[in-house]
Amino acid sequence: MSDQNVSLPLSPVDQAGWRSLISAQVGTWLLIAVALCLPLVVAGSWVFALGICFANAIGVLSVSVLVRYGGEVSIGHTFFSAVGAYTVAILDTRFGIPLWLSVPPALALGVVAGILFAWPSRRLSGIYLAVSTLALALAVPEIINNADGLTGGYEGLYVSEPLVPGVKMSLQRYYAALAVLLAVTYGLARLRRSRQGLALLLSKSHPAAADAFGARQVWARVAVMGISGGIAALCGAMLAFAGSTVSPSGFTFWAAIFLLVGSVVSVYGLTFPRALIGGAFLTLIPQFLSASGAWIPVLYGVALLGVILAGHYLPRLTQAMGRRKGGA
Amino acid sequence: MDAATNALTGQGISLSFGGIKVLKGLDVTFRAGEITGLIGPNGAGKTSLFNCLTGAYSPQEGQIAYAGQSLDGLSPAARAGKGIVRSFQHVALSLDLTVLENVMIGVARNHHAGWLNAFLPLPRGRAERAEMERAAMGALTDLGLADAAHSLPDALPPGMLRLVEIARAIVGKPDVLLLDEPAAGLNNSETRDLMQTLRKLRSGGLVMVVVEHDMDLVMSICDRIYVMNFGEFVACGTADEVRRDPDVIRIYLGSDDD
Ligand SMILES: Nc1ncnc2c1ncn2[C@@H]1O[C@H](COP(=O)(O)OP(=O)(O)O)[C@@H](O)[C@H]1O
Ligand SMILES: [Mg+2]
Image 1 (cartoon, helix red, strand yellow):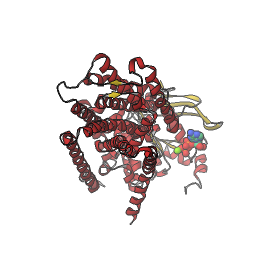
Image 2: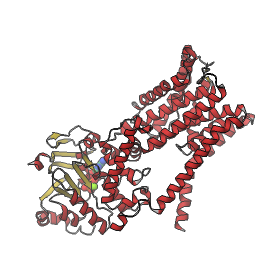
Image 3: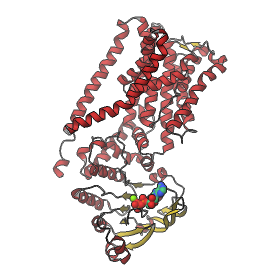
Image 4: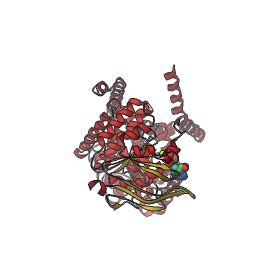
């Protein structure tokens, strides 16, 4: 017993864990380096699409964080991304306020919207919560069209204020979206290690235990929705800036569903590479599919179904395979 | 004197679920500086009493107070803030967190770094994490679990998880420590180490209550023992008194084998 206590703090298993962690980090840094250099080598249309992809990746993270830390799914996160997008677009078009001044209020409004939604729905979970988020998603286009004096209605708004005057706008769109995506993944990595993050994770699986150590369930729900709403608003803000136009067609019910699908595709990952997978799915698959004309809805439906089934069964399959390997 | 003023007390605690009386007007005094045992057959209501004391259940009747202050109406989180901490009969650890991180949650109530610290590398948040890690590592080392600190719970055997559960409860230096079957699933040497740890924890200010089926453990570490059956106390006293009590003998005779 006592000789075990004085041994090295890392067992061989942990060392293998560290090694895979380090190699994963090297992969992430490589990916970041590639992302930083890409605009120098690829065509302009790709730079634009990748900027949108980064913004979408932020949206995927907003849903994944709800799954990971709250154990809940949302099919209405376009509500929060619309809050962010219209904050940026309205401040830009009405007051000429550039992105670096409009992102903080967009983030704050997203957090507030998340908290305001969390409070009345704090006792709901599972399918009931998902359906109540659905109501949010369905309301968004209506709200935007009704407030057309402010939002520009169907026409939408055009975001044109540069972030850094004098720098090529296409590069600004790309790098701003990338920077915010990196900042969000960094913040989420820190959250995982924070006191609040630990409490949220315990609350997800054992609410009574978390309660007994001072983390109330209502606190956990409100906190997770606030974080998730804030990240979704950042997604909207960057969609507005990177995509340059904001209109209700970007915040439909389907867009909300795709955010969830993107989250499933990335296996609810909160890292930069995982978020990119989800963002790429949201951004690029529709473009590839649009080449196939009338088959789009069918193909998209099949893709969706495949992804959801894979997301549902893959973890169990790998678990079962791991068990067989362990038994052999 | 001090022991009496810092006691955890319940008066006339009655709890029922849909007409079924689970606790029938219990009066208890758990004193500081003592280890109190709470024994009785399965379904006697031991866990339910813990749930009432921590605020997880609201008894229909009765008052609960700690150090002379009423706890009635306080949430479990608020009671945790007053230093009332428990371990769970069914181990309640997060599988997403390492063993060390699970134990760190036990000291969370002593730390207050704000939300900015959760997302940004600010000094206060870093210091908090380091301090929480140090405290958790200390508790794990005391229970012989230092090697498992960085493992995930599902990689460990049940006995170790039980000890992690206890480490989480004791790490925050509680004023009231309620342990629900802390030796369940432990082997003999683990049980012996646990007894050692609990004895060392006994101090003038601490109210410690242990629900346990392991009679050797209860009889050897407890200063006072409450025996419960069907939501009532059938006996209360020192180990020797309880051992000789005819009602206790009747309840436990023949149920030795489970
Ligand atoms: N939440 C609950 N709902 C209904 N019945 C409960 C609940 N909690 C405990 N009980 C009942 O209370 C009785 C005492 O249970 P418990 O306190 O767990 O006993 P012990 O811990 O002594 O084994 C049991 O009959 C149990 O079924
Ligand atoms: Mg019990």
